[in-house]
Image (cartoon, rainbow, N blue to C red; front, side, top):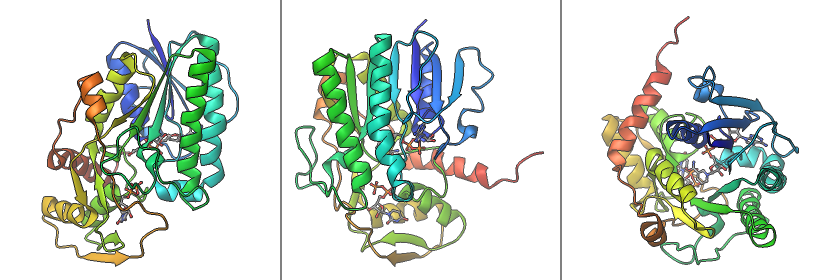
Length: 315
Ligand code: NAD
Ligand code: UDP
């Protein structure tokens, strides 16, 4: 049986990845310190024989007493308010956590996959962003703790690949949304949905003309699975190229919910990227992958999930 270890497996993306790996008949070891994760995301898995949860901070070295075939490093605070609140942990999990998990993969002879981010492109001067673009990141701004940790992590993975011959993959994930996001994690998708459900004004930052391109979680997980199964060691963008302004996005949420909430404008966070859109030509050609879920369909599923959180809990 193939065993895959997922760090950050109790988080939004990590828990969907655990589900997919189990569906592919992998045994899954989830390592998470629950810093920004939620035990409810993996509550449906904990009784299974082929699933193991280890509560641990991966910035601290650790050993695993069984064979491991794949290490997928997803642990990291990921929403701007999380990593602004947790700057040192963010830098540590991207650097020390990456080093520790690379060491684990090397000692087990395992394949390694790093969850990197479109934030390595910073506030991009090239549009859309291909993998060959080196980015425009402010290392000393508040977002630098996340962006630079991920850039360091990519460099570390490539060093293990070149120096130790590690079998590695790097996925550059663009804004992804879906069920299991935290309603108050501050990212635009959960923020706007929760505000609209509560009848509160939507908090649009700046003039709302900055753009993002939102990918539904099942499309992302399919891309990650194909990348893991591929032979490609250089970074690959996975995201949905459908780009829109944040103001258009806020309006889409209001339309979908038939909400009368207003839009309120707030200051733009420091170094907030003005545009973001993945160039997915590489993923199309080497993985035969492209997103399939339309924004309205993905948002409808996400809204359903947020509605269930609003229901009174049993017991
Ligand atoms: P999340 O906060 O829901 O999940 C992160 C998980 O990592 C949480 O369960 C948290 O408890 C865990 N974690 C954090 N530090 C840890 C540590 N030191 N040791 C062990 N566990 C730790 O966020 P997410 O959106 O699911 O993001 C997962 C990964 O994907 C992150 O690496 C993030 O950088 C990357 N990513 C996400 C997106 C996105 O749009 N969701 C975009 C780009 C990259
Ligand atoms: N944003 C916003 N209001 C919010 C949260 C986010 O206008 O309540 C904006 C934010 O400034 C950014 C975009 O939405 O331009 C996406 O933000 P998010 O935090 O979701 O992701 P990231 O900035 O990492 O792309």
